[in-house]
Structures are given as structure tokens and as C-alpha cells.
Length: 218
Ligand SMILES: NC(=O)c1ccc[n+]([C@@H]2O[C@H](COP(=O)([O-])OP(=O)(O)OC[C@H]3O[C@@H](n4cnc5c(N)ncnc54)[C@H](OP(=O)(O)O)[C@@H]3O)[C@@H](O)[C@H]2O)c1
Figure 1 (cartoon, rainbow, N blue to C red):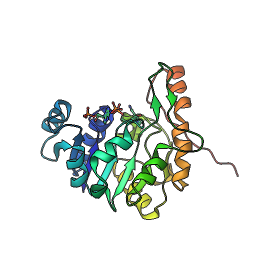
Figure 2 (cartoon, rainbow, N blue to C red):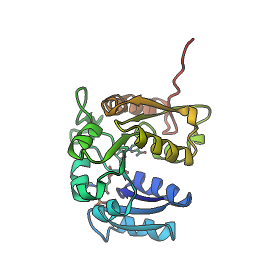
Figure 3 (cartoon, rainbow, N blue to C red):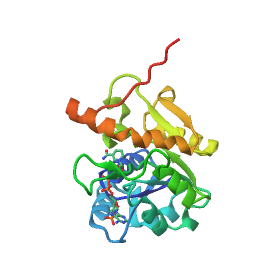
Figure 4 (cartoon, rainbow, N blue to C red):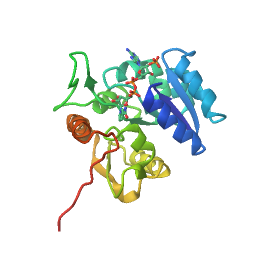
């Protein structure tokens, strides 16, 4: 599958490497075609990897993954171009973390809205699914780095898009039983508002190799 990864940070590089190793063709997008991190990533990742602008990567991908901050995601996707997102599965793993007032970060959007909803409203012809933002990128690509059955969540209005996302997650090692469909895109609010708890857990436990397991009573 052809996948456009928007973002040259640690998440874009980690996810892009894993997706390329699984046999997908991956193009990493950046604000500039010659981004040094993207060029280095493409060279070290091999034949399945290439890089370009956000628009190049979005046009290339049958699936597009937003791996940029929730604070800049709309600007990134505008640069990617609505025409390059039309009809496509657009996976959003961003978090609305605003570090501008120091630590701990605040949420730039919450309660009555979410980044994923903003994206779906701005790009109504894209099929947006929120997932993966609740785990560190090392766990995203290697769920068995955390023992036992632990969960990931899906939020999105398009059932087929969520099914395609499920298959992609399973290709990275996520077990079918670990993936919980929360419902429509509005449920992304909960996934994004989980981040303050995740940050506290990381502080308390001293590791990013953490995830939550949802236990269900009789
Ligand atoms: N760290 C994790 O393990 C983890 C886990 C789950 C979710 N997330 C989320 O994943 C996302 C990516 O995190 P990250 O740390 O890998 O990357 P990041 O530093 O948040 O984002 C890097 C990307 O943002 C672009 N960018 C920065 N400022 C911009 C602006 N003003 N306008 C347009 N684009 C801009 C950069 O473009 P250039 O390429 O041109 O520099 C780069 O491609 C975040 O939303 C984060 O919360 C992270």
C-alpha cells in the first residue's frame, strides 16, 4: 500500500520505518522538499521510502497519516491540499498539546471539540479516523513491547475507514481484541483529553512504555 506520512518528527520517522519494513511504500512529507530529517530517514530506510512536501506525500498516499502536532495540523493539511485528501483514509494521531506556556502543556482544544473533528470539518471529503495518539510511538509500532492485552481506540464517522485502519493496525501487531471502536469522530475528544493522564503516568512510572487495558465486568 502507498502511505503518505505527514511529519518528520520522531513519530513520523518511527511509524514510517515500521510501515516501510512491512512492505508499504511510504512517502514522508515536510514543509520543504529538501528537509534534512526526511532525506536522512528515506536514505536509511531504503527502497520503500521517499520524501517530499506535505502535498507530495498526501498525493502519493492511498492512506495519509497526520504525524504533526494538533496545534499545526490544520495548516499542515491545508498545505497537503484538500484535493490530495479527497476520499482517502486520513489517520490522525496528533495531540493538541500546547507547550507555549511551559510545562505541563495545556490542551489547545478540548471538551466541546477536538483536533480530529476540526480536521473532519475542514476536509469533509477525507475519511478521518483518530487513533494511536494514546500510546508512545515505540508502542505504536511494537505493541508487544507492553505485556498483555492493552487497548487502542478508534473514532470516526466512516465505518469502512475504521475497518481499513483496523487492518493497518493489525499489520503492526495490534490484536483484533485490543482495538475498541468508540464511535463517531466526536469520541476523539476523549482520546485527546486522555493526554494529561498519560503524561502523569509517564512521570509516575518513569517510562513511555505504558498503555491502558480496559477491563469489562460481567
Ligand atoms: N512522541 C510520541 O511518541 C507520540 C505519541 C502519540 C502521539 N504523538 C503526537 O504525534 C504528533 C507528532 O509528534 P512528533 O514529536 O513526531 O513531531 P512534531 O515535532 O510535533 O511535528 C513535526 C512536524 O511538524 C511540522 N511543523 C512544525 N511546525 C509547523 C508549522 N508551524 N506549520 C506546519 N508544520 C509544522 C514539521 O515540519 P517540517 O518537517 O517542515 O519541520 C514536522 O514535519 C504530535 O501531535 C504528538 O502529540 C506523539
